[in-house]
Length: 264
Image 1 (tube, rainbow, N blue to C red):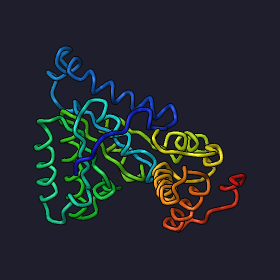
Image 2 (tube, rainbow, N blue to C red):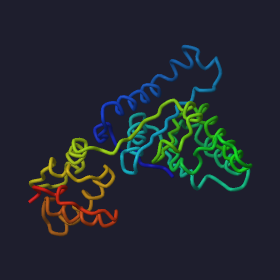
Image 3 (cartoon, rainbow, N blue to C red):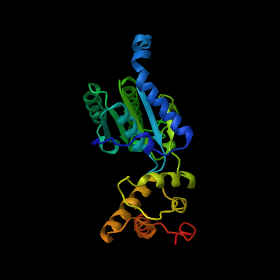
Image 4 (cartoon, rainbow, N blue to C red):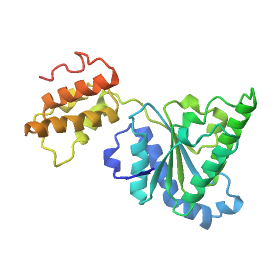
């Protein structure tokens, strides 16, 4: 599934350590020809030359957006692969599916975003039966292709524990996407509305009290924009309040008085 990569570094609100790591990934992409070809690292063998990354963190914390930012900067195609749909119960089929994906992507150096890595990874180094042994073979094949892939291959998961330490050693970059604190949430709110969107008396500091991830903030902002458009008004705190109630209802989450204190 192709993703239209429009996000930029300015859109990505993350703590400094995470931004530095993503900057390192960009550096490796930018200078891989010099290091591999001109400086001779490729002549030592292709294993480990692939730029591979694991992004882990709760849903909506920016994993996909980070991949978009990298794709946008380098004008590369970005493809999302749902690993839960690639994995097959039939022996050998998963490897065939993965082989087709990597072979198709090799020529264009596309960025491959393997979502739902939990479907394939797990605490599987302890082999108890033939299924565990087969799962290990599938994981090893994926990592082997990632290590040799000439583009960037990213695994995403909601849980770091989904990736066994023996496997994570073969991934070059491991980036945690933490649940955003109030300060980061405020910064996300400050950037969430497009410049063309009319707004009125928005208190971003107060909006940062909402205890949700960036993906939910985007949903709330979009919902609020529709409320405002229907009322032919600029987006205001009332619209965001109504949108928040809808989003929290969807999340089966209680909106607390502390989160909306001082809104009105």
